[in-house]
Amino acid sequence: MEKTWRWFGPNDKITLDMLRQIGVEGIVTSLHHIPNGEVWSLDEVLKMKNFIEDHGLRWSVVESLPVSESIKYAGPDRDQLIENYKESLANLGKAGVKTICYNFMPVLDWARTELEYPNPDGTSNLYFNKAEFAYFDIHILKREGAEKDFDEETLRRMREEVAPRMDAEAERRLVDNIIVKTQGFVNGNISEKDLQPVEKFRSLLELYKGIDADKLRANMAYFLNAIMPVCDEYDINMCVHPDDPPMQILGLPRIVTCDADIQAFLDAVPNPHNGLTFCAGSLSAGAHNDVPALARKYASRTHFVHARICKPQANGDFREASHLDPRLIDVVRTFETLRPEVPMRVDHAPLMLGDEKMGYNAGYSFHGRMLALGMVSGMMATIDAEKK
Ligand code: DNO
Image 1 (cartoon, helix red, strand yellow):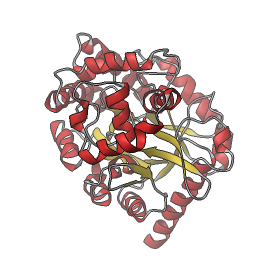
Image 2 (tube, helix red, strand yellow; image 1 turned 60 degrees about the horizontal axis):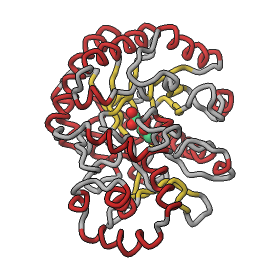
Image 3 (cartoon, rainbow, N blue to C red; image 1 turned 90 degrees about the horizontal axis):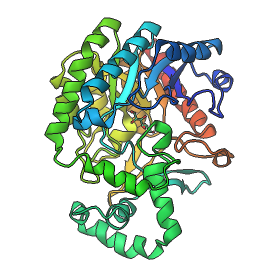
């Protein structure tokens, strides 16, 4: 697979020169300065492309070209926003940037409750604590009916283990982790500039009243059918990112969570340009997913791979596991064997060796990801050597 790296643009503290030294071949990035829904002009696309190429690398993947909420819930301006999306795609196609990662998660992109969860070896990682998430949903957001979305054991943990340690500061940190710090840098709905993130978040949830999984699926198919002619014209591969975590949260529908979901959106628009980002990490956070089997089943419709893996706990929590986990080796083997041309980036690595002082975006450390890239590159080299 092509070794790529998610880079957040010229302001990223990790420079393209650093990335060349550690074996990165291609860059995964977005035009983060353009607000969601606006057209990416050919000029802006070329500026980014040339900047990357001037540093001896190539722009391999767009992550993400964000899909506006209104396209997801079918708001009155969705057709205009789809036209803008098509124009951005055409400009990317003209510039030769042809792999586009996006997601179709309502309101909240990925979700974590802890960003620096300590590991026994002194490093730290991302963590999803279901009981803390329940506390956020029930006591901070105060979402109507939230309590019935959690099992008895999670509610007990929330009452006995989480609630007693929640003061104003701990609540602020939880809000920050779940809807602010993890969202702004991925061009999500809430950023550090928002003074009342919880209020804003509540009004976003309102937009989805009456939208169930079937409606969301229909809206996704509507969007995909509308953009496929542009993808056909420029040979652009769209690859949806699975829902992270791959389960229902906050009363919102989630439609890319499991085998049946993936099959359904691929079948709904059976064009090879309608494909998947195989994020092994997101899928593995659900104990219902057999991730190596999914990799084998969907390799031919996968256009981009995220290499990481999670360990779901019996209580519904999950943690990011080592990039050397056998399930990830299996996934890498599958793609390196069946689809060696697809781009792959390592994802969500630990904070280590001073990363924690650098203010990197959550999950996107330098040393941690460099170590992970070394691990995955080693697997790839071994698999290639065995093929000969
Ligand atoms: C988090 C990322 C996601 C991903 C988007 C793609 O670390 O994997 O934010 O970029 O969901 O649209």
